[in-house]
Length: 86
Ligand SMILES: [Zn+2]
Image 1 (cartoon, protein in one colour):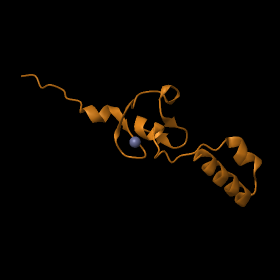
Image 2 (cartoon, protein in one colour):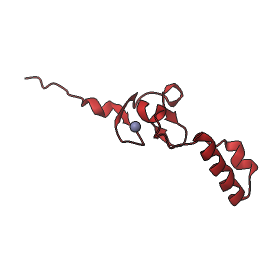
Image 3 (tube, protein in one colour):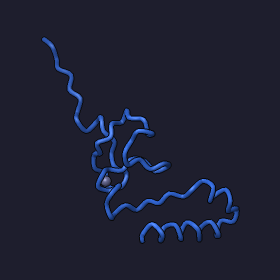
Image 4 (tube, helix red, strand yellow):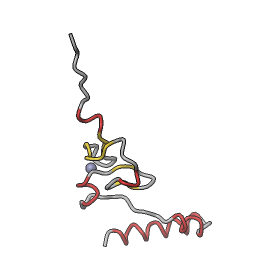
């Protein structure tokens, strides 16, 4: 009697951090080769990555380091956010 090993389809793929849907990215894929991967946030599905509901912005590490004042940094991040909405 041999028992077939079943790997559930969804278990090998990453979940989208925004909508929670399964992405087409394998959990084993290296982040450098992933599509829709946001540094410091996680994996997005294609729809969220390309879609209007993408709600993530990227802040350069340089901006953070060059802005020791938190409220100034906050203003810059807010500016980046609105830039990304254009
Ligand atoms: Zn998604």
